[in-house]
Image (cartoon, rainbow, N blue to C red; front, side):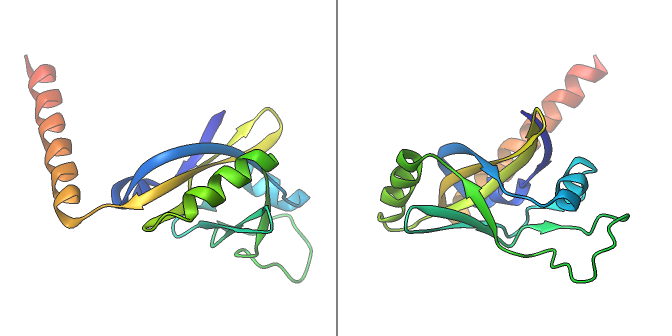
Length: 147
């Protein structure tokens, strides 16, 4: 899968417990916008009702050559998951403190796919540790480049 956009904020705010790949139902102009990279996953989350998953809060900008009058960039879009996967995700959601968010969106051949993750929120000290690890890695990379 060729990644078009990642939700970096989700990786910082949450601890990923499990990952799934799901297809997404898009209209013609929307898939063209996705291929052009005009998509934002910040704040996107997944809801599951009656074994049917949908993504909310994902922003796909209007395709510049689209002539339709009414376009909602934040509309609810249906996800295509196997029934067994949706049951596994809904079982994960029954545990306290977990949610499902969109981690990345990309193209798999001619189809748009969304990588979703069952996540648990990080505590403040966990976020500080992540920042510290990132800074140490950056310093090591600089030292290696220098010498």
